[in-house]
Length: 324
Image (tube, rainbow, N blue to C red; front, side):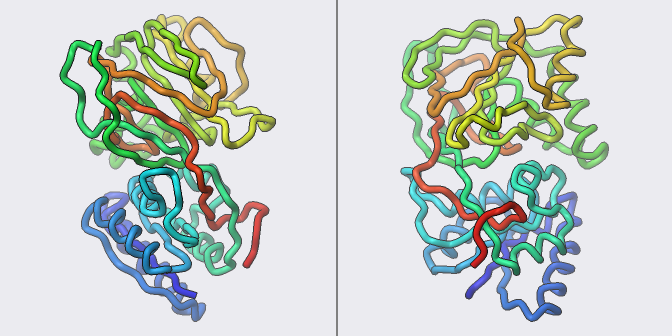
């Protein structure tokens, strides 16, 4: 059995490198055979993951934050939603925002996470496939450019304010204030200046026009980003996304919005927040707020199509599943 750790030593303001060394020493002390490689950037993480899958590495483990996790995950898939190997995915989180770990009961304690990988206990999870553009379209909004790339995400994609929030929170404020507080401050700052716009969307092939929208969340797990979460009914199949549409709000509605988004409580649709479930969503270009983010980082631009990848991903976890 072959295991490869793909390590981002720069996560968590450079602290990840020391944490990764602790993990390596721990695995060596347990006589667990593995190789490791350190990356210089996110493209390295993706390219190394692709090659490891092609080389038949049994266990490919991301050691870093949400950006590293996402890039390594993307290396498991081709452009059509198919896995390119039978490799399994592991995560040892050394970043700031453990949404993926919280979604699938992966310990955030690095040594406990290493134990999970050594135990070879995994589940099969759905993965979001998103086709989108790498550059914003420069037109009057009437002409649509077909998406030119395919990417994958594990937790949630956001169009609108969420993309601006990801860019702002990733700019350094989380390093000073921490993940939760840094993201919360960025959220309030952007919210007060953000203006809603109209989107043309298709949900399960039903065409719609939605008005005065500040954000659309399309998620698999309840964790949207850095403490922001949404209630997802356990009876909904896990191959169905929740679609959470947030409208421009009044100041008097802000406390209610914050309570819903930071407690993850169940709610009935309001004038500023509505939720539904679907297996596929298409969002047309919008020249006012065209940016898309997923799993915590800006990723591209509208137009986009989001659906579940054809193949599920085997992920090491403490949840009930399979032990091999």
